[in-house]
Length: 127
Image (cartoon, rainbow, N blue to C red; front, side):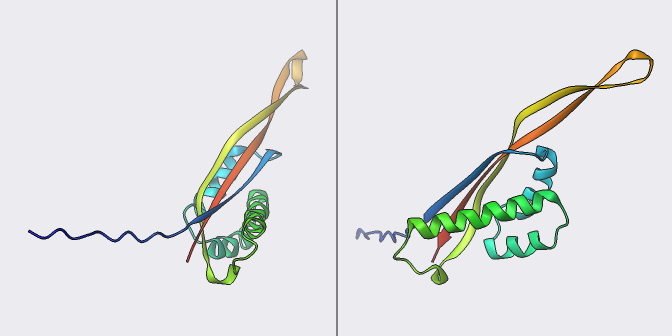
């Protein structure tokens, strides 16, 4: 019985991260947009985000462009045109909540909760 040596091909995947905190948009509205582009190519997702009429789409698109720019800074010697970028992880978490009371009829008060979000995006580059 002959032993066959396994050849391991080492693909160097480089990651880039961008995050934004205290976004004045509720997490539920951001998650609707984030679910559309999760685990997709960055080029496709930017094209898709340009055609969505939503406040969250603009915020996520700007953060994606920031993640690409972080990758460029991290890998100065590499050519960006040779790589395909994919969204590896996109997290939308709830930030703090602004609570106030709005006057209501008969001396009552209604609670108003303004929710803020935290957004975290990781992209990965493949040859």
